[in-house]
Structures are given as structure tokens and as C-alpha cells.
Image (tube, rainbow over all chains, first blue to last red; front, side, top):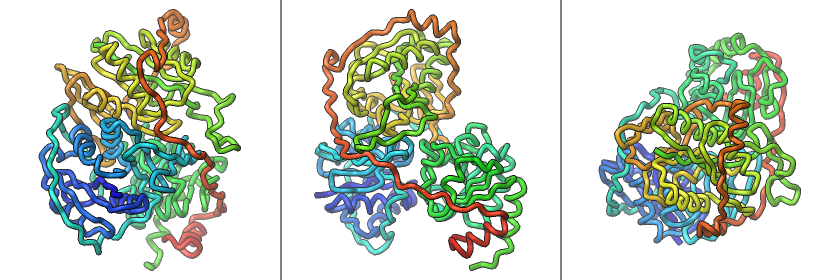
Length: 315
Length: 249
């Protein structure tokens, strides 16, 4: 048995979500290899080799992997997959883009967004926005899997000493090219990796008012997120969205501000350890999942919260 | 150019799914069904491209039980030109759906297939990518902007860090994200007109596609319930509880 993990990275740093995939891969069983595909990604390969539990790091370094476009990535994964029992990737916008394409090239199904490994061929995944959990068994020769990383502990980033070997790049299918990127710049932690998340909804009324949440976030070392309603209204960019089709987060503390709590939003945050809801509508469904609910006008409560947190002695 | 738009009949966006007591799946009896919201966005995008003069014909496809015809009618009422129903009573996995669509693409020769990025029932997010692989076409997934020009198409994609733009050779696959457009409601006259638009019926067997599932669902259960907590009276009490009871700040 052997399992291949597709590393998530930006050519410079290994994204820590990969560590959770390594854990999931270990539960599937067998040797865990990691594929680092990128351009000038040697530093990432070095980091991957140190991850505890990794047997071998395979590096595909070529210009056409620089932005991990789906067409070349899927061709590469499909060329390596026949030597493995399973291939796992992070269920983020990269994994969701290239993994199904690789699966179809291999004529196998994909098991999306798994939250638990029951056996080498049996997995649990949420369906219907997390309102049901399905246990599915695969009959395919190689299992192509994307992993919801919030439900797996991260493997230790240090302690391993895997061998590194190059793999041949597969020719670029030449179907697509990278034009450009507009990435949100933020000093705050990444939404899916943050210990604390504070999110705003339609109740925020406009983008400027998110500044109130930013101030609280800075005091807590938190990331700032949003409901679909706030993103659709243009208050904040799309990468803030938490929910069924946006990002799934499970921080230690999630603070929902002015969010009513549609099932699609709950799907993205209900595994958080502690949930706080601040909403002026006491009937809002968000209160049904909140550990601490505060029925209040957010424009009064959030500045008060900022003031109270600023006064708090450091732990 | 011709565009193919697959549309899936799913549980309505506003209905909460209920698990069957025998754990065999989700109860869909007497539940309101609608077009998958991402597929509505796909139909709308095709119509807008037609209104802009880029697209000449829109073919809406649905795969599933007879009632999927209603989903196709809905797409026709929005503005699609004709429909194809691939009738089967068996559940179809994304790989099987992609294989059926591949045959239809070979028969219809569209230059673009626009799909929803994900169906809100199985939440798989696979079909468009799989179809692209089977056809050897490029893919622009999670699109928030689609700009065809000079035999190519530029797709702006919603990615984790923000937005990414890729240029694809044509023919191409596009899958829609939420911000691509806001789908229109079908007007009454258009609903009446849609009744006269043609819908072809086919079966997976006629198309020569094996739709046998690769996955066996062993059980479907409700997720662990989260208990509602307490209401606090003030920000001071909230901060105190978070610090001294929950220990998270």
C-alpha cells in the first residue's frame, strides 16, 4: 500500500493544510509520499521532507506547474496515480479544480471533501450542506480524494527526514494559460488556519463597517470572514466567504456578527469549538448553534467588545 | 456559437434535508425540487452571451427521472432554445454524468459547456472538471467573469486568495460561481413560450454509456447536533464567559 498526497503551496512555503492531508493519508494506510509540483519549489520540497510520517517527497519542477493550473496538474497526477492506492489533496479551490480532472483521466470516481477515514476504501463526507453525513465505499482501483482539512489533526511539521526525488514533468497540454491574479493582501491570519474568526453578514450594512470587525480581529489575532449575503452585496471580496460553497472553517472561536445563520452559512462554520452570535433579531437561526448569544445592535456591541478586549490583561 | 448547459434537479435551496430513518439516504418524497442554483447561473450566463451576440443557440440538458423535464422547461422559460432529457431512474455519479455529457457534446458540437460548479445535494463539485478531462478541453472553474474573444475565452476564477484569470483555448468548459451573475426570473409569456420549445428524450443505453456507480453508500446519518448555548445580557458578560468559562480569549 502507498498513498500520494498533493502538496498545497505557493512555490515558497508549504501550506499547513497539507499537514492535515498527511494525517488523513496515514489513516488510509501504507507509505505516504508527497508530490510537490511547482516552479522553483525546492524550499517547499525541503519543508515537506521534514513532515513527520512522510516516506518520500517527489518533486515536479517545471514552468507549467508554476500556477498549478488544472490541465497540467491533472495530467501529472494521472501519470503517477497508477502506482498508488489513493491520492489525496486539500479540498480547497486548487484541489477542487485539478483532482476531479485527474479522476476522470483515470476513469475513477472522486470522493470529495472527506471528514473521516473509516477504512482504506470507506470514507465519511458531508452532503446537503452538511445536513447529512454519508459513509461511502469505493470500488475504484485508485481512490481520488479531497480532504476537508478542518477535521483532521495536522501532522508534525518537523521530525521527518524523507528522501526527495525528482519526477519527470508531463508535457503541458497547452490548453490554458495564466493571465493574472488579484490576491487580497492581509496581515491577518488565513481564514482557514486562524485560531479565531470574526465574520460579518448583511447586518454590517456596508464595506466600511467591516473596519469595526478588523479592529476586534487585530486584538484577537483573528481572521475576518463574511456570509454570502455580505459578499454578494459587495461589502468584502469573495475570498472572505464562509459556507457550503465558500470556505469551511473550524476555529477555536467563531464570532458571527449580523449574520442570520442560513443553513448554507452554518455548513461552513458549525464545527467551530465555540460560537458567538451577535444579532439584533433574537429569532435569528444563528442563535440555535451559538454557545453564547448576544441580542444587541451590532453597531453598539462591536465597539464595546473592542473596548473590553483592549482592556483585558494579557494571558 | 452553440452552448450546452446541463441543469440538475435538486432539493430546493430553502428546504432543509431530512435523513431517512433507515439511513439509506435523504428523504425526497413530497419535498420541493428546483433547478440547482449554480445551474441557474449557468443558464443565465449563456443567455447573456446570446443577448451579446456571441452565442447563437443554447441547449439545456438534464439527466435523471422524468420530472427533470420540469427543470429543462425552467431553463427554456429563462431563454434556452431547446432541451435534451437523458432519462434514467438510477442515481448517477458525476463521472457517469460527465460520460453522458461527453457523448452529447460529440453529437451537438457546442463550443462551450457552462455548468454549475457544484450541485447543492451531493456537494461533489466534479462534473465540469471531469467532462473537461474526458473531452481534452480546458476548464475555467468557479467563474466570476467569462469573456470570449478571438477564438479564446478569458475566465476570472474565484480562488482562496482572491481572483485568478486564465485564458482558455476553445472549445472550453466553464463552471459558475455565485458572483458570475444574478439569474433572471422567467416571465409568464416566456413560460408559455417554453411549453412549445422542443425537448428530445434519450437514455444512457441509447448513448452507449455505462452509468454503474463506483461508490456504494453504506449509510447516511444526521450530523452531530449542536446544542444551543446561553444568551448573555451584555458585552461585559460575553467577554467574561469567553475568558473564564470557555477559555478562548
